[in-house]
Image 1: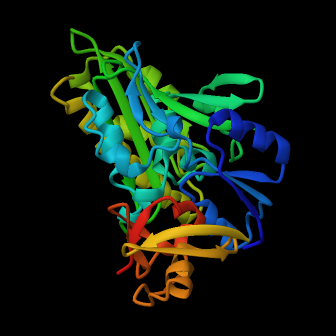
Image 2: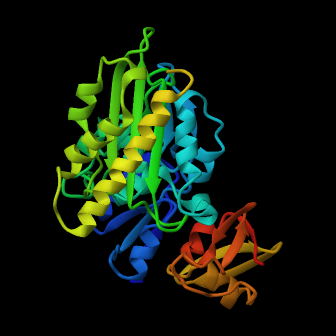
Length: 287
Length: 75
């Protein structure tokens, strides 16, 4: 590790002004589970670390008046896992409780994963798939970004060095009737080789009023299968064939055929995961 | 260098440490508790695991400064 100065602001305003003062050499550290590994290999060499661990308002979950679930950026995976969320929000807990390993979940944060923007991280697929809103603090004030605006198409994030991701706002518990997340990893504590999230909302007649499908880990940022989603919207949930829909998703995201053996493997993987996610989301008791 | 006080196994230990000091290094080299093993140093193997505020963490992937406000127990 290269030497650095360690700063512990007590408020978000102070943190932003410190980042503004020391940009571009300053980096935010939350749980540090990704950043410290990168610093050990000197892939990251910040001169100043601004720790968010002392800022109480950045951690924790609350339901806003609009029904949205507001998750503070420094909320740990462990906190998400035991939050006892209801409705489709329970899937957020499930995803938070089934990644990396227990010691990493104690320290690792949702905002840290999003800002590290490693496409293999489950939180990216979750946020992109459910269309969460991301609140960013800048010296000039707060701005809200969609996942598409937050992530750089080629990888990484679009935040300026003096900006902080403050909170993630997930849609209200009744925005989706079911959300299913599926991933494949080599060992339980590994990051995903591929992940798929399927979020559906059915109307009173059992038709798909809305469906969102996101595929993660196969591109520098999570990809939405918007074409397939548009085709499925409006059809009765009971008559959607998960097999053919999964094939269409894999084709839309990764092309129809060919490629290296690795690409072919990835396509089959996405297809299998999409099939599982669709089956779960469409067969959920509420849909 | 920065002054820090960390409670290990109920004992308050104060030292002036380099900012880069990992919690693992603090426990082994400053507190002298070598039962916490130094393994892969990349948050994989888990042989450096310690309890921090009742939760398990891998001490090779936490800065000693990050954990200064909390009590921990080395195993």
